[in-house]
Length: 209
Image 1 (cartoon, helix red, strand yellow):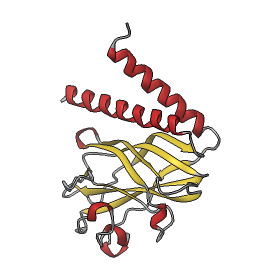
Image 2 (cartoon, helix red, strand yellow):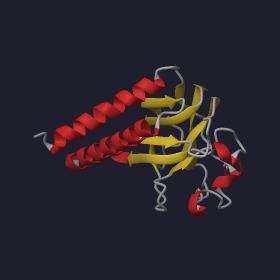
Image 3 (cartoon, one colour):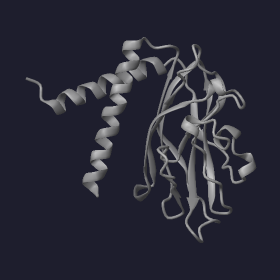
Image 4 (cartoon, one colour):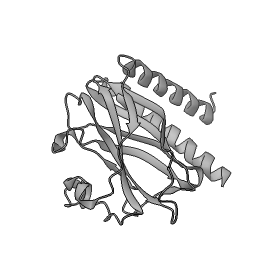
């Protein structure tokens, strides 16, 4: 009889294999964009209450607060994406406004087109470790996913007082991209694996604390 933890490991491996299979057709690049520091430059859907359940980005207070875009280039019929963002925790901290977003917001791949808005599936901020782990999203409203270059997500940050002139040293790691339209069974496997991996990482952080 296979033990429960072994079954979870098999599921995680199978899910990763499915992601690699669908993401192997192209080689898009996920990267950090230019920080938004002016409230006027925050996308309107994140300030006017039209985002999920009326959630809004808290007003940015210069020079401390900023909204960090994470972008992708070279996408082709993008369906699912995942990344981990690392940073210097002595310079900046991720801000969780306590509204259920964890300070991670979906982005319009095409500015002004709400149909291209990404749906955030997960993301785990760990300021003590200098990372926002397993940020993931998909495009449930699109039969054909977006292509080209665009924003995937926005993440809310704040400088530690006195550190505004220092570099946060943002870096993108652990990227996964699914392009094309996976079969429903494959997508279910991908999402189940994401949940398993996220849960295991949360448990690992808890043990380290």
